[in-house]
Length: 237
Image 1 (cartoon, one colour):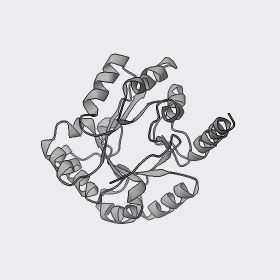
Image 2 (cartoon, rainbow, N blue to C red):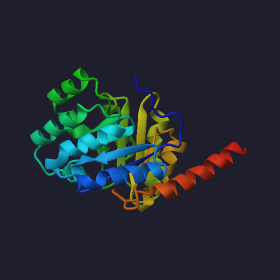
Image 3 (spheres, rainbow, N blue to C red):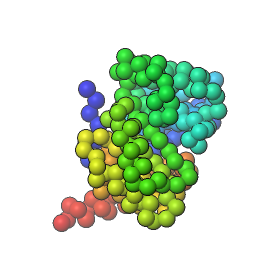
Image 4 (cartoon, rainbow, N blue to C red):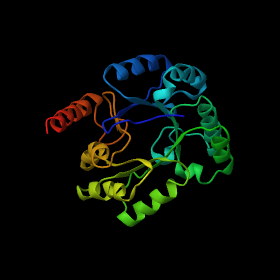
């Protein structure tokens, strides 16, 4: 049995590189700077080198999310759907802490769902809206659909104004048992990246290692400092 997420202040650092040779250094730096978990973005890594990337990443797989983000959701994987599913299976066989699979892929592929179930691969079902933040009823409908496939759900939108933070965080008002990571991207959504763990008890939130991989993503150092201050204030009360 996998036991995850013991408190509110966990941070997952997203790592991406176009050279597998740089990956060990990035992993070491992220852990040194306080990352609780790591997201390995395989869509950034040269596909022909994926075996080497998996060999390196397997050493930290019990605290890692393995991701192959498609261009449809602003990732860098530009192969066809058949190739993506094949690579997702290959990555999934290493049994990471979580395998990130986009809901658009999972929902429409019975074979992939069967593979995940038969091999008992823990998955993070994800959705990214880079245009806006839908109204609350549409967000809730999306969330209810996603949670059918896994207890771990990542639902991310784009904030066009400060009020969009309240929309996406309202998902936590309807969440009972799902491990939900919900926040809004962009400058207007930075507060939701922080508050999802505090208000929503999200299992973790995402940070960068110097260079953001998504709009509004904070550096791990900045995020850790903010959480440390909040933790100290809570303990003193």
